[in-house]
Length: 210
Image 1 (cartoon, rainbow, N blue to C red):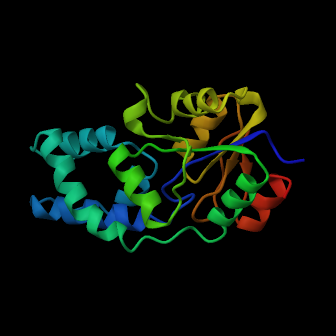
Image 2: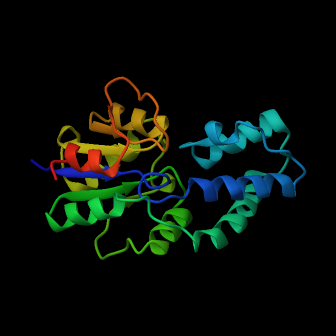
């Protein structure tokens, strides 16, 4: 049976945007004379803009105010968003669930500006679509508030919903919200305790009863 609701992470889960985020971050860092650390990707995957800024400020000496820094990063990112591609199989599953009447929302640790730009780039925009950005909650992932906000908007009990996320940060948020949590990483890895770990869109379809 298909679930009552499915709440999707965006970056890396619905859209293949993580390489674009990394490229924009690297370009922004280099523009202020900071060499990107070799483990940058692992350190920022699924993390919201403010904690990333704090890490860059405290460990690498980034001395721009946050507002100036984020504008610089987004100035690099937004032109790249025009080249954005969906994650193979993900949006097809989203649309199939939508046709079946399953409640859905996109739940992201990205700012509203990025959520809207990314979803427009891949054509995932329609009247009544529910999205939760980092700007819509007090506490982002790995805390449960973003997924709980989605459940509230959809009018469903969190226990009746699935959360789908590609990052450990997001999977932890789904579990903390009391949702059945599908961890679909970019590359095979262990997930947090309690998560359902998958490695393909076919496995995703099976877990969602499609």
